[in-house]
Image 1 (tube, rainbow, N blue to C red):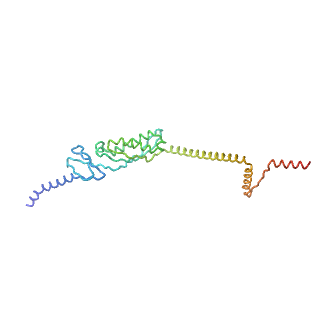
Image 2: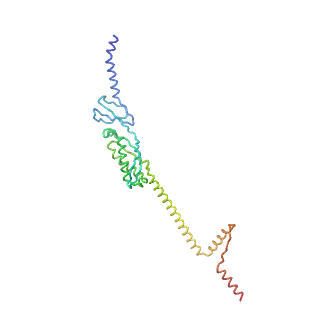
Image 3: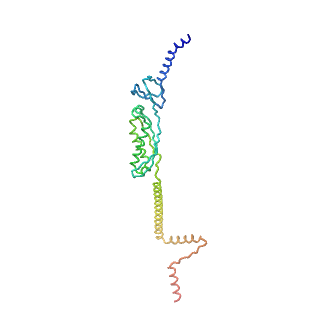
Length: 259
């Protein structure tokens, strides 16, 4: 009897388990940073979430999509600039899904697609830029990359917010040339500064000479000051120049006494 009872209750037990399984599969929980894209018999129903909701078992299929910002590293690759310089450039791309339904329906793998379009766009932009622009106008190139990649990913429901070029690696020969150029530029600036200093000093001396020529007493004072500065040196021999006017006066006195 007990065996028959257990045999009779087996279908009931299986039915209960089936019902539990169906109810559990009908309950879906989606996190705050996720959305659940629902397909019913292959047709798109829409995105649901966050929180708890119900789907129709067997008929409905749900795919979760993460809405958080994704950091995508674009690996270093060799590129040729517009002035025919070979460089290695790598970058980082920040993007997020803004339309979960399009991210699932319009593209097979939106992450890989964004990665590939970032690589090709970066190659095109670097190829249209010269080396000096790539090194000095990094911000403008980053903005241009962001706009071009964002236009390409918009149909997929992906918003590219930031694109940053991390590193530009130059060949060794180009590094030596740029180092020589920088050194020559520094020497040029040093010579210009020295020449400007000499010009200012000469101009100041000329102004001082003009001022002193207007007042002969100032020349004598400057002369005495110079003698004072020289006399401070212990091992110095000082020769006092005698004005010609004074010598002429002495000669006249000598000739007068002889007569």
